[in-house]
Length: 246
Image (cartoon, rainbow, N blue to C red; front, side):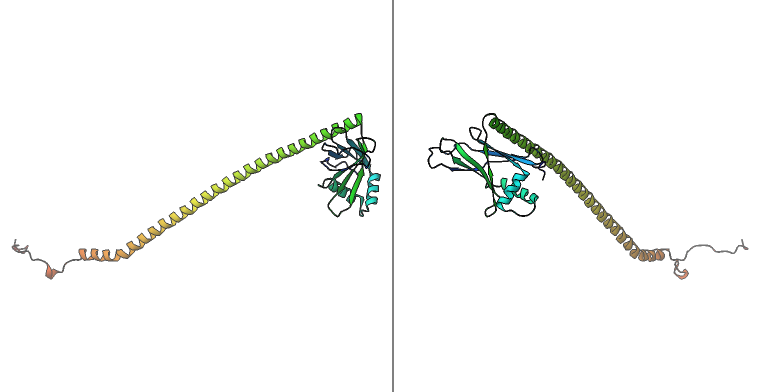
């Protein structure tokens, strides 16, 4: 199983304090953060710290993860178990259990407890205390990892905002184009209606002219008709003579 593609996991565990019966030690007052990451392809590292005097670590190789799997009795493939492990670490039910030391005010024992959901198998990871330079390095590594993770999230948000802005421009341009096409279509329909109405008016005018034409023609014929000879007015006082007598 390779963990190269595993993204760093950060979280704040719920603190559970178990005081020792013969100790006057008190519950740690600082909040804790944990960091799970894969420095290589075959193991995981877990750091838990309050950035003060309590910093803890766990190295989990493939064999150690197999031991955890066998201990809690999860069947299926190893890949399925790893997925369950990651899901459990990412859940809201991760606890940091600290047990008080009988000889001092420090912590004698620490473990990280994770569970995917209530009723599911519980994963328990023992932690080893780190001191001095090892603790400082773990805290620095967690801080840098957290900064890198937040930076990646910020870059993703910026890219998503840019993509959203581009989509908004595309949608706006498409909307404007559709509105323009709708206006052109409406103008074309209006023009067709106007042309149809004009053609209809012209057709009606021609029809009316045709209906009135025979009456006018009759009137014309009446006006031009020759009056009969017997109804003509006689010309009085005219001298009629034969051409030979002249």
